[in-house]
Image (cartoon, rainbow, N blue to C red; front, side, top):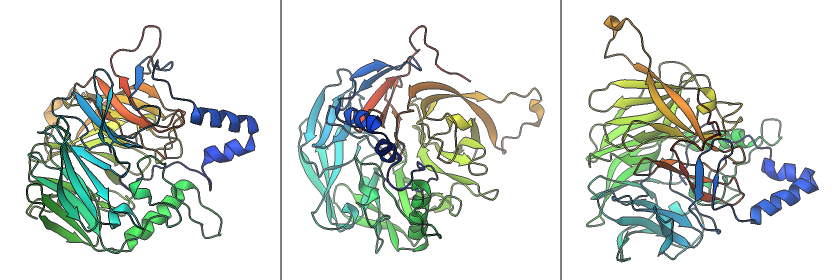
Length: 459
């Protein structure tokens, strides 16, 4: 799990709201307990949308990678995911599971874009967060099951692999502390929901979202020394690319340019200049977006499949006007695609052909305060047409609209677990994580036309 401060977490009072509600009603408590132990359905047609959903994880549960990390083989035949027992491969046709790493300590990182390789790490035992302990980085050939150690880190974490699979990129912080000292470090949870607690000025417990804001603000203000580094996969040598006391996070390599990195300045989104670019030799450091109004926020950035565009969640201002915005790295051309309040999502993603977007929704306590936003949605771009094209200026922002179609009803989902959706390589399905049936599982929804007789909302 990667930590980021997005003002988009569930508004929970003290303990989890689900637990409080259950304690107030014995009948509801019994029903919740039954749901937690009963196996989630293997496949069903969503009655609200008509789209077919299948469960990819087995009854023990599972989790998928963060939304921008690659989890598929280059051929698209297999996907990798984590389970309580280790790392498994999923056959995308039969949905059969094959164990790859039988070690519950194995932290899945990503798959390669060129080779059929799974990258993972294992931290040494000890106190503190896994990222603060020594860890070994491994590469495993999916077909031969042969694993080799790439490098050993004294501390820190790896976030991405470059297009030609020669470099890894990661971050390390010297002297930071867990965001929530009283619970296991939320930065490294694969299966549990995040937990935060803090008291307000009056001494009373804050709700979940505000408590997380307090903890994030404390970490951001600490100005902990950090490094952005790369590791040579062939030699295991580590090289520093950038040093800062900004909170460095979310390093990502371009899917096409082996030398291009983007990363974020983490912290309260309205206080930071979030998105940055840099080359692997340390040159080209520059922000990708600059603030134009008070309380403007942006983040959860990701590359388009062709590597030309960086897309991100933009709000002008926070919680009021919502866009999926993009910048062309070569030309500087900017696009803004308008999103309705109920279709704003914790994460957005784009299809392999770059033509269609999708979002994983959000609940009413998140930044959009959407009254009906707990849906996984498909988003199709439409141009904003004006008859007077003579005044079109290519140097200005190009506005468009994202037309929504609901795919999955997530009204039973607890958004302390982020769905982290991703398109399959064939563009016909979306994979996401959910706790809608109690246990955390990995699911896949068919984005083809819904079943006859069931209406899927379209704006």
